[in-house]
Amino acid sequence: MSHFPKPPEGSWTEHYGIDTAPMSYEDSISPEHHELEREAIFARSWLNVGRVEQLRNKERRYTQDIAVADTTVLVVEEVDGGISAFRSPKDGESGTGPRPVQVDVWEGFVFVNLDDSNTASLRESLGRFASGLEGYPFGEMTQVFKYRSDVGSNWKLYIDAFAEFYHAPVLHAKQYVSDESRKLMSYGFEALYYDLDGPHGMVSSWGGMAPPKDPMMVKPIERILRSGNFGPWDKPDVAGLADLPPGLNPADHPAWGLDSYVFFPNFMLVVWEPGWFLTYHYWPTAYNRHTFEGTLYMAPPRNATDRLRQEIAAVTFKEFALQDSNTLEATQKMLETRVVSHFPLCDQEILLRHLHTSAQKAVDAYRETHAPANHSAG
Image (tube, rainbow, N blue to C red; front, top):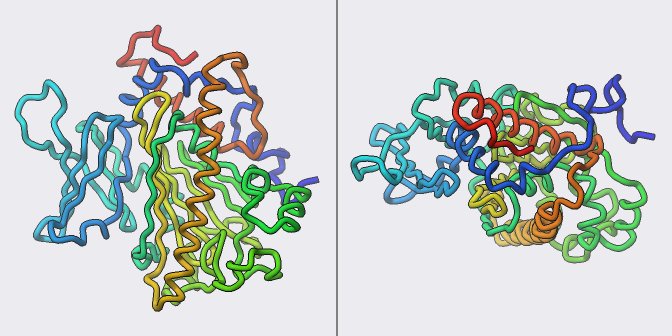
């Protein structure tokens, strides 16, 4: 029996009209397919390259490497307050200076598009999920913790790992006290709500409410600091947190804990009920490698206690990420054996299926006009 209501069709996957057949992961193990994704997706999509707060330095600029496009992007704040972006020249291009690229900002997030012929605006590309998040106090969360790792797996596989949550009670069991861990595993997991918009997807989940119903559900240090797995327990005094944007908690569930958005192709935004957010970026460096970047954003600490609460949340996040990434290289190697070619996905893996389907559609559209017909992921 389901813990939460499902659509009339009986499953989220069928509700959104996505094929339910076993899925191939050839797109994650094919060097040829990776080359197509570089051109079809990363050379033609709006890519998030940070936030405007990164411009608050003496030079009023910062850079972001985009290895999958063989370039580095320079973001600059102009004298009039506007923002410009430039990319490094590619091999074979005449001249040596940086080349201007399209740049735009949504809610403080800076995006670039490397396609000179692009006519789709950033706002149009981000769709209704962006509309539903507008007004959240992203700009007030200026205490930042960053992590970066080189991961031996295809970029989509790490998004897969973060796009479903049912693994958490098992893979992250040691993050909880033993009694709570056993209870969570016996209960199982289901999300509150899923939604799709073009190539983007989101999942809304219960959990992470602060403080917990029973303090003994968490470890002693979490009880002392009032912080832990899901961030500080005490919501910061930030305007905008009391009246959230309409896109958050779409199920309007009292147990809501977080909403996780996959903005295609490689940007994830997670908003937590206790009043903070984080972002993930997945930058491909090869068909079987990518650079993962995780960034936590919280309100500035008012005192040493606030800072300690944030530090334990940041360290806990690092541990979560290490546990998730620990499985990815083994997954990549297993897939590359091709012993099993197609895999059944459950309803809670709808965002996984949607990501790979969306990426394949972009590649297919590109191949129709640019690539030889025999270049296929199978």
